[in-house]
Length: 354
Image (tube, rainbow, N blue to C red; front, side):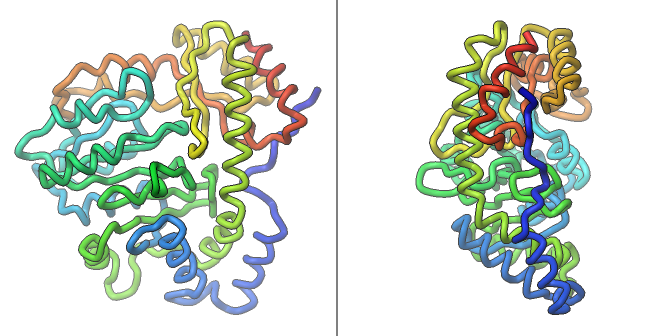
């Protein structure tokens, strides 16, 4: 059976109509566009946050959050050694020093207990990312940060639509970030958003962004094409969850040597699902075989565990982060969006890799 993977970014009539309407109305070329205002308002409502500022990327959203948190030269920011490397670059770009902790023993997300142990007088903020459908324990991390006067930046760039307890991912930190890059769960090619948890956070963002025009604005056309995707976000996340659960329970037992590293939750959102294999050489072999049959499997993030201590403070062992950097595989969400009647074909394709 030939797999028919969905096209992503999506080519929907509703997206074409939204773009055409933005052009026809002239909104595409305006400062303070209606499309941008509408998207920011809708994201604030959908994600349950005080306010939203749009920007050019998820990476820009993280950097703006750090700056709004008052992080600067000589400060420290705690983050996981296995995470999107751009978060560490953002810390360094504003003159602060990353403090690396390991991920949890049973997942790919930051170990909250180690965050508490890694504190110092110089720590100003914590960046906690939700990855592979697994939520960081941001409720505990928010408590730790509040107790110590730190700022929690909740990186929800991979998990648009995930819920944690009673709230959406991205709504629990002092700041939250969302990516709308070309491959993400909602996309406009290149875009992002910063969620402000309260009026003080919103005011700090405004001092950075408003000069007096928006210095980090998202183009109106980009904002317009996101909104039809928000209409279907819950629907598509449900399909991704169903396929992820099918893989875990029906396929994984046949994938000898593969270990599931992703979430398994009714509220999860999957940008990618993650597995570990026995070695880096085995990972390379699997990726090469997957490429030959058109299955979107690749490497996970590069681990920062071996980064020089001149560059980062490393107060705890980073063994698991190091191991994940060598052995983690990810399956792209395009495969999770496959039609349900194609799931057996997906299973056969994955089984062929072993």
